[in-house]
View 1 (cartoon, one colour):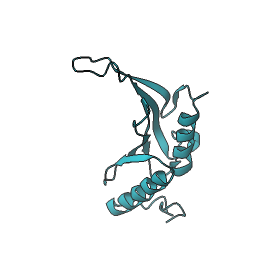
View 2: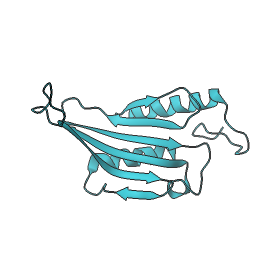
View 3: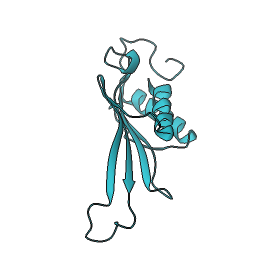
View 4: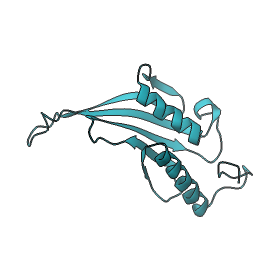
Length: 138
């Protein structure tokens, strides 16, 4: 394995135990950075990292698809092939029974085998989450 827990031989695919161990290490790394994490102990490369909505009116979330090896389709030729950074805001005044328009989701960044959308400028927390994802997974 490499220093980040990945395989040293690109022709030697990870088995389920390798994927689970790797995702668990990455989940701990994001928790140490102050984020919450959603992941499944499977061989899929999907994970979500987020700042939950608590005292604030928003939730900041990154949904990421990454692979075992870097790819020409990855961000900067890396392992992340899909990344969405989203800001979900709620209006507590409108959050009453029967009212359905109390939340809105804004996409700050979207990459799907190529950059689709980048509105991270001026979004300090969004940019910090984006940088953390690239630092840990790409």
